[in-house]
Structures are given as C-alpha cells and as structure tokens.
Amino acid sequence: MSKVKVGFVGVGGIAGVHLENVSKNSNAEIVAVCDIAEENAKKKGLQYNATPYTDLDEMLEKEVMDAVFVCVPPFAHGDIEEKIVAKGIHLLVEKPLGLDIETVQKKAKVIKDSGVICGVGYCLRYLDTVAKAKEYLKDKTIAMVRGHYITSFVSTPWYREMNKSGGQLVEQSTHTLDLMRYLAGEFDSVYANMSLQVLSDIPNIDIPDVTSVNVTFESGAVGHLDSSMTQLDHRTGIEILGKDFRVEIDGVNVSIVEKDSTITYKSKVDFYQEQDNRFIEAVMKGDPAILLSDYEDGVKTLAATLASNKSNELGLPIKLSSLIEDKISL
Image 1: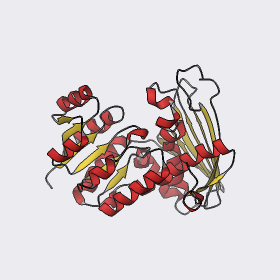
Image 2: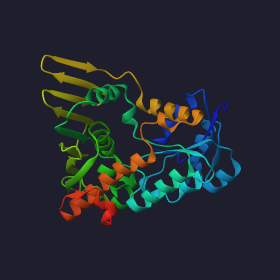
Image 3: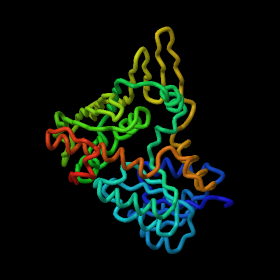
Image 4: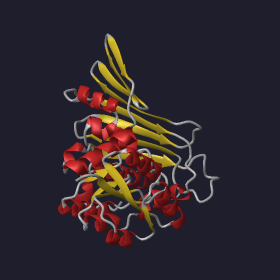
C-alpha cells in the first residue's frame, strides 16, 4: 500500500488532534470526513483537502478507504463500527466505546470476526515514560495502586448528562483507570461512591462532580481512583507501591523510587502523535500487535467504569466477572 487512505466519522473535539496528526504522517492521506453538522464537515474537508459528508452510508459507498477514525460522543456510536468493518476497513475508535456493555460486547465480536485491525484511543499507553514504568514493573509484586484525575468542568452540553456521557469516570478519568489496568493487571472488583456536591447550579447537570472508586486486582493488590471536576487546574497521576519501591506517574513523567535512588524520566513524545502513527503503521503492515490497546481491551476498561457507576447506584461492590455470568445490567 502506498499511502493509507483515511476517513473520519465525527470531526469535533478530539478529532481535531487526530486530523492534524494524520495530516503530518507521510504514510497517510485524509480522503474523507463525515459529521452530522454539515458546516463542520465542510470546514474540515476544506482544511485537509478531503471530501466532506454528512451521511456515513454515502461516504462508505463512494470512498475507497483503508482506515477510519471514529470520534463521536459516547451516546452516538449506533452501528457506525459495524458498517465500517463490513467493508473491511480498519478502525481507530475513540474512548469510551459506548454506554451499554452488552452492545459494546456485541460490537467487539463483530469487529473480531471481521478480521480488521481496531485500535482504541487509550493514548497514555503510548507514552515513552509509561513504557519505562511497564518494563520496571514486569517482574514486581504490586501491593497498592493510587490514582487520581482531578480537573475542571467541561462545558460541552452532552458531557453533563449521564445518559449521554456516562459521567466523568466513563468519559475522562477512564484514561487513568485504563493506565492502572495496563500497569498493574486486571481488576477483580470495584466499589464506588459518587456525589454531585458543589456544581449542581450548572444547567441540566446530573453527573457527579466527585467520585471515589476502590478497586481490587486479580493479583490481590488493592487500589483506588479519585476523580473530580471541581478544580481550576488539571492534575492526573498514579502511584504504584510494592515492597521498598514505588512508581510515580505525575502527568506524563515517571519516577522510580527505591531505597537509595530516585530516577525520573521526562516524556519526550506527543502521546497522541505516537498512538496515531502506530495505528497507521499497523494498518500498513497488517500487524495489530503494533497497537497497545485494541477493541477487546478497551471493552474491559469500559466495563470497569460502567460497573463503578452501577456500584454507586446499588451501594454495593461489583465483581467484574459477574457482568457476563450474572447479566448485571449496566
């Protein structure tokens, strides 16, 4: 393949970052963009010399594409992925993958059966510093994981509605929860407390502004994630504790702390660019192993966030293995 021909579904928000990254990749060419807002589709089409569409079916019928970036809000996925993979087109799907676990699990099967390459936008996995942390932890026994995602309110209208965004944990803090999984292994159970405590004056808001999730890992390790959108600034991080060591992730930088030494690695990469370049490379080479997060993996992080919402609703811990076995409705 000379150049990977790329299409976009959804051109608002995070799509702007992907569009810019793909346009800079010498192995890729943006050929088509689709958005229900015609003005936005035309604007991005003009900017990137791509044909604009407002209808996905029309774009799939008229365009020859090797890969499509799906950058739509959580509630808007419908059958977008199924239509794309039915044409044998590879996918990168932005997180979260949806708001209903059974629907997303069915999508996962359709995508797997189609044989296409499908990445998911858990971009922090592509940090050079996270690679250092993962390498260091590979033979370590982890005791505890402490995560936080503390930021300000997002003014996007759909974000504040639970049935459209799933709340902050599903839509934003999922990045930190995913990194906890990636570095410390699979979750066994979640137990969450959430409250709309100080932002209830925002029109139409029904999502919590503070969240605390206790997690247990299959390894026996324990941990938690604190999440809030009450602040003026933005802070994210994880501490991974073991006997006589800890790994600290502060934003994009990583420190490894032992008895007589602390080594700090400063990130030298744009993790979005790394992710998008790896996806284009995976499509060119036909090698899904180049990706660090595929659709089935993304489903596991989504399940943990949706289960946390359910735990808060029920006031009970939820074992993630029971999602399928006991048909817990999320």
